[in-house]
Length: 131
Image (cartoon, rainbow, N blue to C red):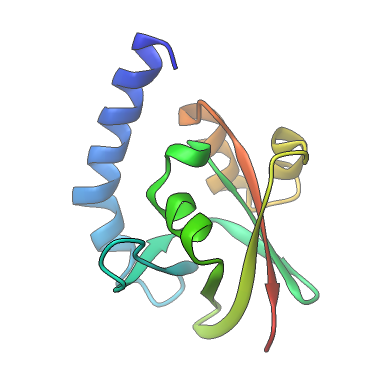
């Protein structure tokens, strides 16, 4: 990551962590991804933009393996996703071979635009839903 990308990463993640995410987690219509903290073992809920397609949920991480929720998925891929107010269990799979920019075109426009604007290392994630 270049120095400018690192500065951008720190600025954006600080705003997300301390301002945007605490507000968005409380919104009943916000899609959430719940992972298990790799160190604490506690549930960690992250607002995400993605789309359910059949028994799969697709999303794109703007910072790839630097994202905390991606690091949690690598430690424990069992997750929950809240879509339209309902929780679903599933197993997350990191898809580095997928074209994340192309995938964003099939996901909700507002979030995809933000991910493209701030992202520096896009990574597609597929969650195979079990319920």
